[in-house]
Amino acid sequence: MSAPTPPLPADSRVRLGPWHWVALLVGVTPLVVYAFSPRVGDLDLYFRTARAFLTGATPNQDFRFEYPPYALLWFVPAAWLRSTQWEFVPVFGLQLAIMDGLIKWTLLREGARRWGREWRSFVPCLAYSVTSWAAALYYLKRYDLIPAVLTLGALVALARRRDALAGLALAVGIVTKLYPVVLVPLAVAVCWKRGTLGKLVMGLTLGVAPLVPLSFVWPWWGFASFHVDRGLQVESLGASLLWAAHHLGLVKGVLWVHAPAAYELHGAVAEGVRATTRWLWVAGSLGMAALGMWSVRRKMPERVEDLARLALGPLVAFIILNPVLSPQFLTWLMGAAALSLLSGSRSVAVLVLVAAILSRGVFVGPTYKHGLGIPQTLLLLTRNGLLMAAAVLLVRDAWRRASVSASAPDASVPSVDFIPAATEPVDPASVGLAAQRR
Image 1: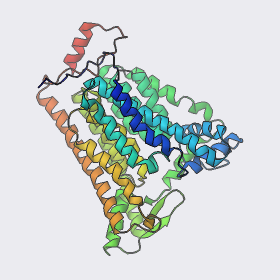
Image 2 (image 1 turned 90 degrees about the vertical axis):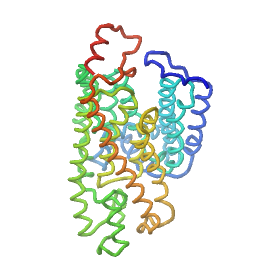
Image 3 (image 1 turned 180 degrees about the vertical axis):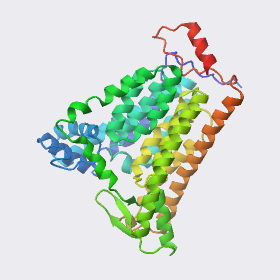
């Protein structure tokens, strides 16, 4: 039996083999077909707001716009090209299918960078493809794929020492969907330890700079008030537990209500759960971000997949502790989870991807509009339980990683993923010193 092929150095040229391109084609094709599905989802909202904007209306002044300002700019091209909803749906769907292809191409490229043309190089893309097919109901009918591409791009750029580009991608992602903000502390910790914080800040600044002139013509910050007033969404952790208690007869007066943006649980008990969940959400998200920064301070991420695992910490906490948890939120996790399958522990990635697949089952049958039945409630509890288990494992792994570094500071292998690209001049002495600092 031949010895396994060692990982490729980060500065070697990455060439995808014929089977990589076949895998990409197989992974993308079903979703390109689904882009032409007449199912609308939230695309009707995107179309109406974009058309209003194109006719001269001002968001959050002439009409309500519930997303950060850059989101609207992603809706405009398809709405400009097509003047009716039924024409808009396939065009915007193809735009999302292109984003899906970018993610899968990135996963294949990172797999080839790590393992050449071995079977292991296909694992991240294969796992992501299966999950995206199962989640197509919301995966390709929401715009969350766009910030997901930006987030994954930021992680890969950070791993390749393209810190200004990482900051720019994070900033654009934040002003598109907000959630990438939880990754800023991690990026700051990495760049601080490298001594490249200035580049990251420059990228972040460039990404948000258009907001300054935009503020004079568009009260873009108005989207925040919409989300502050949102209730306890039925798929959140607290809501799933409360609805299960309702089924068991332990809680009375829980109402399943179709609110303006989602289905929510209302009632006195639900309001109490909502208030408690908000505090847990803020504390948990900040705590996980702080844990990631502390872990980086003790030991720099050695590989791009290590950075992806650290990113999953604040992302999972932000989602599972949130009083608002829509199924498309799991799109935010899928890229980092798939990337972390390249090597090392795969438990968290499997939990996250299985949770994303299970989300589809919650919508089986008509019960979602009137109150989940017992089978769907059990499935929702399982999905949320998997995400909670992933969060616990991420805390444990981050703690262990930092503890091992403290007890054996010289045991770590110098990272190949953080070696500058070949196009940049490198001082061999400085590379040696950097390895010693880790």
